[in-house]
Length: 346
Image (cartoon, rainbow, N blue to C red; front, side, top):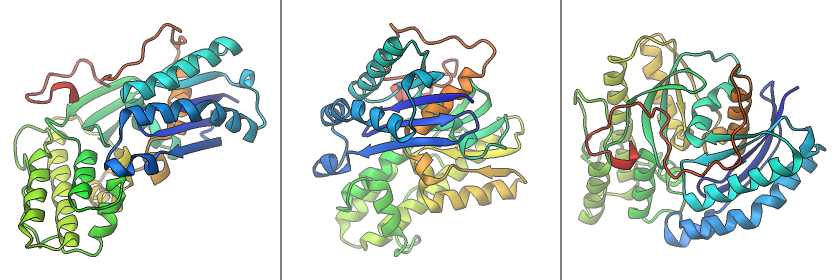
């Protein structure tokens, strides 16, 4: 049975996990940094990197102990090598290199976005390629066609802010707790989604791309006006965001060869209202719908280990070199056309 150790440290979760070839999470641990970053209303890269450096080694030891497994019994060590906050990525990747060298176990450098892209196959072992992927997180908002491991065609990306960032900024505007996404979702349950007239950026544009900067600005103006309840602003923002997602999917699907399944992954995929709307969208088109459980939507090492298992099974697999560098930016589809205004977020 294949067994891979996964390491994740791209943002503010320090995580390690052991996953086997059947998709069983043998052991895992995740340490959140929410309390450390809460006073700032967002992730502070220096604080995040220091926390990873302090926590990662004992966490890996604990995961191995939980599984009663030695590092030499693993078939590979998979670690996030980018994209992400470079300090944190370096901590995880350097740790993985040292362990791989010391134990003579192959290293597999994983694109964090590929971890999200393949995580639905960890949760649903019946999910087959190809599928359409909506990847929505704090740093990325993309629509891709997934034809296999390492075979990604990007159809849409954000030209400014990602949806997860828009959720976090909305929470900060409304004075909610950090992390912002879950806080906005909780508040929105008690609000009227029709109460606040908010824009739907890019709605009905023939370009498939996303934009959320204008929506954030509209939330700020609504809040500063003093005319609306916070719950109504949260609910209206969430509804506007969902409308944007559905409209952009419609346009993207016009450019994509038919696929049987719509998949959503990334931190925003943990939002119940988003998942419900996407499930309805898929049902209208006679498509299957898959979303990982919320614990596999947010950053975790199980998805990194699973991506390592998927890569290990490729006929042309070769281990990653130990001189591989961490990457703050790493597109899933490097051949995708440059997008007007998208800059590094493409």
